[in-house]
Image (cartoon, rainbow, N blue to C red; front, side, top):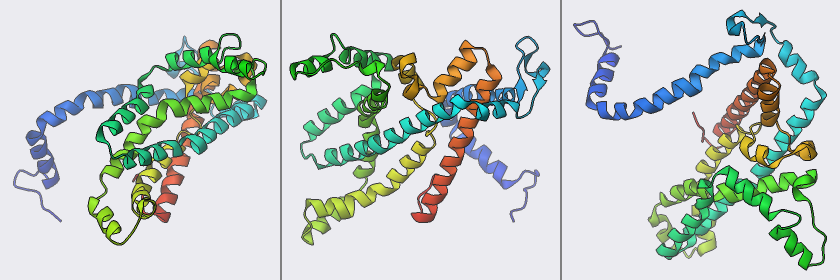
Length: 313
C-alpha cells in the first residue's frame, strides 16, 4: 500500500493533479460536455420524485402530497396501458429484427468495393438521410403515400389497384415506421461497422489467399468474426431502447385512426403529461421505461460477457 508523502496527500491525488496540469486544455474542452450532462441529464433526475407524489403545481415538488406507488398501481390497472406497451415493444422488435442487420450488410458491401471513389460516393449517399430532419422525412412519407397524389398510389393505379389510405389504416403503420427508420439510419450506423472492418489486418486476408480461401471464405472466417464484438455492443445498446420508440416520427405520422398500432409509451406520456397536465402519472410511466431499459441493458451485457467475453463494462 502506497504511503502518503510528506505533505499528507495521497499519491492518487498527486497523480490526478499532475495529469490535470499536463492536460489542462483537454479537460477544458471537456467542460461544455460535462456542464451539458449535469444540467440536462443528471439534474432532471431529481424530478423523478414526482412519480411518487400527486403533484400540485402551485405547491411544488416539496409541498405536494406523497402517494408512494399509487401512480404505478394506476398504470398497471389501466387497460389501455397493455395496448401501448405492446405497440411500443412490437415497433422496436420489428425495427431490431429488420433494421439491425441492414447496417451490417451495408458495411460488408462497402468493404468489398475496390474502387475508392465509388466507395466514398456510395457511403456519402447512404448516410445523408440521417442528417435530414424527421419533420422533412415524415413530410416526404406523407406526400409519397397520399391516396390522391402520392407516387406509391399512382404506381398502384397503373397496375390496376385501388388507392390505399396507408396513413389511416392501422395495419400499415408499423411497416411504414420500420421502413422509414431503416432508410434514415442504416447508412449512418454502417459507419461504425465499417470502422471496425478497417481495423482488420490485411495480413489475415493475404494469409487466407495463400491458403486458397476465396472471397466467401474470407468473409465467413475473417471479416464477419471480426465484426462480432461490435455487433454485440450495438445489440446491447439497442436492447436498452426496446421501450423507447422514435417519439418525433410517430407524433408526425400517427393520428387517432391509427392509435391501435401507433400509440406508444412516449406519445402517451406526452398526452398525459403536457396535454392533460397529469405530470405524476406521466413521470411514473417514464420511470418505468427507464427501469425496464436498464434491466434489458444489464441483462444483455451479462449474457454477452458470459457467452462471448464482450461487454460494455
